[in-house]
Length: 189
Image 1: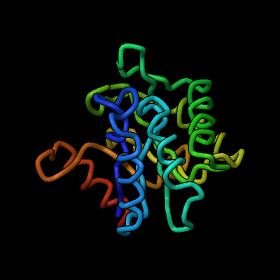
Image 2: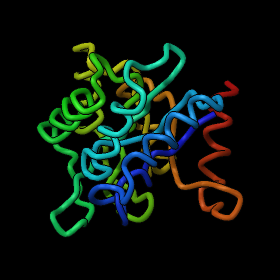
Image 3: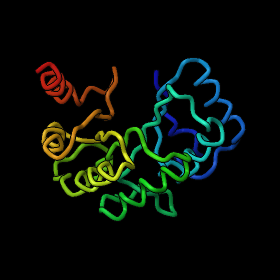
């Protein structure tokens, strides 16, 4: 069971929450209730959500998987800015490690910023190659993708193993039905 930690930061996922103690209590209650997967990113806040996770839950239970995202940063005006260069991704991985107090990140999802509000075609070879190098260095165990197209998933699988795809998809938002079908056929083979 997973918990998305995005809203632990302040309004518009920027700045501190109104009640940091309540945010910590929510995390502890979620884990006590059986949540063993927390989705986060150091660009939430920025940095604040990961700091709250560390304060509330560190040292982490052995069965707790923390999955983070890289590929964006926040402007001083709370804007979402692409950050997909090798240097920016390396810094983001190190920021996540530091703010979560981890030696290795279990799963890092590359959030494509080629389309800020939804998937957009374009090459992810450079950022995925950078993450694959960080994986070889032992800083990342697994790599996933977020906000991507089916073509980007297929292209990404030629660079490294892709363990998950995190797109906006639910009962009301079904724009990625085709992607889900394609991924299901890949998994079944």
